[in-house]
Length: 228
Picture 1 (cartoon, rainbow, N blue to C red):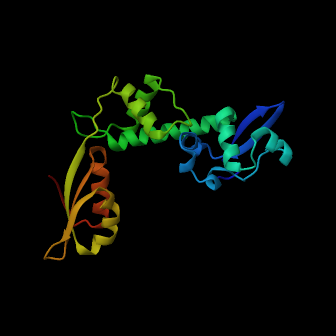
Picture 2: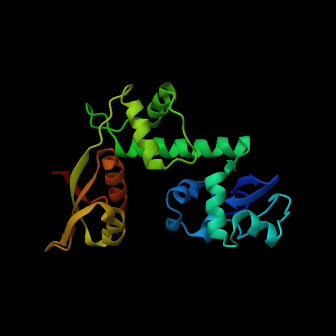
Picture 3: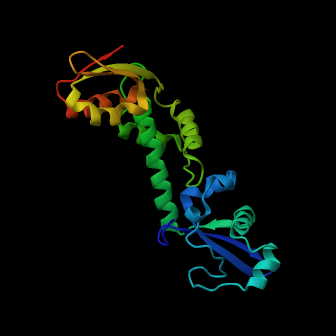
């Protein structure tokens, strides 16, 4: 459940009255696209409708029934999100836009490479290119859709390639537990060798190659790794 401090107002007006709910801003787009995919208890601060959420003023049950033709909070939420609007303070919008912007930048930095050098672009270069492209970050639009839109604009300014590399690791058995937790999401195959070492082959984004190798080498400096 989202906290009161992090929530935003969703508001609808009807019959000269405001009807407000407090919602998680990061789940608004998911709820609008598919309400059934979102746990309503996680989405709402509380299962209540207000005339003035900040002041605690609540409508009567009759007013809710006459306005929404239901008392069901899920159905009421759907109506408010469909017919109403999200109310953000200037600081809330600025903070949400910056958080989303950083997510976009981090994804591109970790997943993409410069096709000439096969290395990730520095974060600063991506930030500057994003600013130059005048890409407008939407605090509510899904991250994956914004990444696609941002990449389309960035490719006009900097070379970007989303490639996968295959790495083979030979890790001392003592480093198995931690290493397996790091590598399992990329793992293609794995097995134990006669000398007690653990071998693992992974496919990972080219931009994350250095970071992943660095994490595994911290677990065991005797790790052997090669690109295949």
